[in-house]
Structure formats: structure tokens, C-alpha cells
Length: 457
Image (tube, rainbow, N blue to C red):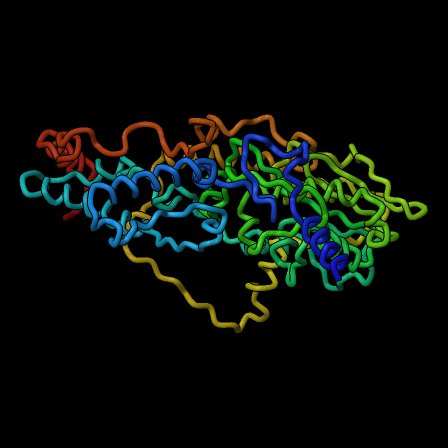
């Protein structure tokens, strides 16, 4: 019985992170049960807990000595900071609409006040962006509006007619993080998750399966989008081995960029072990992340090599990496390729089956988002479009673009890329620039008289 308890104790500890492992950053405090690093607030609290506890004890003794009634009074509650604090879910309500209403109120309130004493020249007013952010292009928080994915679907459908689905598949290319978000019944250990992913890939029955993951550059043009999704880069994460237990909320951890980087690195190393030989079988597996790793089983031994032909370490998004993989396929023979991406999932969910389906029309009220963009705003937007288009047009190349985000619609500030909306002033600098002047009014009347000369009244 004692041996059984000892073995269960050893098995439990094998699932934890080894605190003495050389790969662990000694400057951070990690949770040994799941490998997640503590936040700075939790780390400071736990490191000083004995000192703070001693101070509170001495304070209580001093108070009781000074006042005999103090002993019977309640002790103030001390806020505890530990790893369990990070499990609490918080809900935030967006105040963007309130900010937008205030922005409109301030603008039109000022115009109303001026109109009491002056005649407002709306043509001059609308020569300026009017709002600090182009509301026709972005939200109040500074994130861009994005075109519906169905728009590009229609373009592709016009160029390619595919009536019959292929019966056999030669190559399957999968978006790795998309696959993780669609997984159900996630195993308790990272080794189990790794094997389940491999089982999903080999279930396609294709000779070759490619799994492609996003990279996370800093600074990046996707910083704003990741901020809106509450993705964070500050919390370190260590995955030591396959027996390590995952965090309770696995989907929440997928919002931690450092966790995703650590998890993909674990897949790269673990899939190269002979333990994965039976799961890989006869399938050629290629994993593209910071390089392209190729896995194949020979004599029950897993061989991992680097495929330099498919390496595209300068690509950030999995979508352009997928195009890179497709363009590198053998063009001398017919190849059936299946792409499993977010894009495909969107089509399955939202694409219309018949023309008779109802389509609910969304109407817009009058707000700044209905105003067309100003020339300077449109110019910066075109620069951003040019930069992103250059990446997609050259996705088949290892280095897709010679352009940089800076001065192409973005500006670099404190190691973060921010949108550069326009050059020049947001609105008129003085009241003089916003009102109608008598000289201009007289000139306009004379011009109208000249233009209408010769025409009957």
C-alpha cells in the first residue's frame, strides 16, 4: 500500500515543472503545476510575504498594547495575491460608443455656438478630417474596420469553377492555431494534446500534411488587432515535458503570445522523439514556424530535418505561409490540395446556399462613420493597402516585401507601431477659417452671375 502511494506521489510530481531545470528563467517565479509565470504583482507579493506578515504581526501587538479593546476588534482583511487570482474572469464593457457620442457632441456644439454670431462655411469645415480619427475607417479605440471575408470569396469564385471535390488528397495544409481553437475534449497534458493534434493531421489520409503557425514579430502591424483580442505578451510560460499538466482554461492561455510560442516550440521538439513514430506512421509531416521542420518515420525512428525550400521565417501570418507552401508544390503533375483555415470555417458558417435566402439589411444612422474619408486620410490608407498587398503578392517568396510599415501608414513609437491617420490639422485652427467672409461671398455671387450669363431666368 505504501509503495502504491509513493508511486502515485511520484507520478503526480512528474506532471509538474522541475523548478531546478536549467532552462527556467531564474529571474521569474513560475507555477510548477502548469509552467505559467506569475505576474509582477503576484511575484512581489509572494517574495515579500514573510516580511509583510511579520510587520502586520508586530503592528497588531503594538496596537493591543496601546489599547486593551483592540484585541476584540476585527483584523483588517489583507488582499492575497497568488496564482489563483489569474483564474478569475473579468468582464469589460466597451465605452467606444460613449466616446463617439461625446466627440460628435463637442464638434456640433461648437458649430452651433459659432452659428449664433457667424455664418458657418460648411465647405471649409468639411475640407478637414473634423474628427481626430477617421470614423469611416476605424473605431474610436484606433482599430481598423476590416472588409468582410466574403468579398474575397466572390472574387475567387469568379476566377475558378470547381464542381467536383477531389476523392483523394495529395497534400493537406492546416492553419495550426485555427486547429487548436476548434479542438474539443482537450487532453490534460501537453503530451496528450500533441498526440491528439497529430492524430487529427494523419486522419486526412494524405501522404503529406503541412501544419503552419503564425509568428509574432515586435513591433507588428497586427499589434492593435491583438490588443483588441486581449492577447498579451508579458506573461512567460515554460513547457518542460509531455507529462506537464496544461492550464485549466486552455483557450484563455491561447491569448498569451508567449504561451503559444512555447507550445509550438514544444511540438517541434516532441514530434522529433521516437514516441511519436506510431502516431506519424507513413505520413510526411511538415511544421512551419520559425523554419520548416520535416518529420518522417524510418524503421520506427522519427527523423527530423529542416526543409530550406519551404522556410519562410520572414512571414508573420499563417495565411501567407500557406500560399508559400502551395506555390512550392510540384507544378508538373496534378495535385489535390485541401486547405483547412479560418477562411474556410467562415465560408461554411456564413455562405448562402441559395439566392432565395433572406438577407437582413443593416441601416446606418447619421454619424461620423458615414462621412467619406478626407484626402490625407485616404492617402495614408492607400499606403497601408500598398504595404499589405506587397506582402500577399509576394507570398511565394521567402522575403515577401522590401517595404517597411514605418512611413507606409504607420509610425513607430516606443517599440510599437501606431496608425498614422493623416498629415496636417484635424480641424480649422481659428474661427476665421470656419466662417463665411463678405469678400468671398461677393466673389461667389459674381462667379455665379458670370456662369449663368446667356441663360434665361
